[in-house]
Each structure stands twice: as structure tokens, then as C-alpha cells.
Image 1 (cartoon, one colour):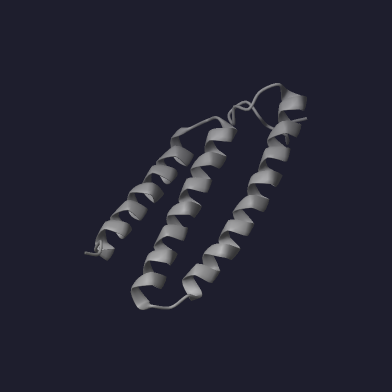
Image 2: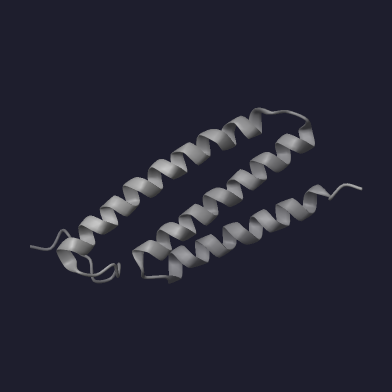
Length: 101
């Protein structure tokens, strides 16, 4: 017995919507990056779902590259957050304004 493709797509949509809501509502920079990672993982789930459904491994190859980009984004993003925290002593997005003189 196989799980229908709709269940995977509904789960992926729920994860993506949760990530979008988190990016729009949260003010903590670390939480925003976690929500962005959640959105990338939901896209990965969709790619793997369609790859499995169509019997093609191209989607899984795309997932590999998306995971590599997500790892690079996480490391660079955390480095930027640490640098901002050292200068401003906060990770609140509303309080960080690096363009202000």
C-alpha cells in the first residue's frame, strides 16, 4: 500500500506556508533563517515527491543541489548574524539598521 501523492503535497504546502508566515511575523533574525530553511525543505519534499511519482531521478539530483545551497546559505547567514550581533548586541531585525549613520 502506497501513500498518495496528495498527502506529500499537502504536507509540503503546509511546511511552506508555515515558513512564509514565520518570515513575515518573526523579528528574530535566527528564526527568520530557520523559516527560510523550512521553505527550502518543503520545496525539496515537493521535488522528491514528483521525482518518485514520475519515476525520474532528476528531482532528487535537484534536491542535492538545493541542500548544498541551503548549507552555504545557513553558514553565510549565521556568520552575518554573528557579525551584526557583535556590533549591535541584538538579533532583532527591527533594531538592526546598518545603513544608519
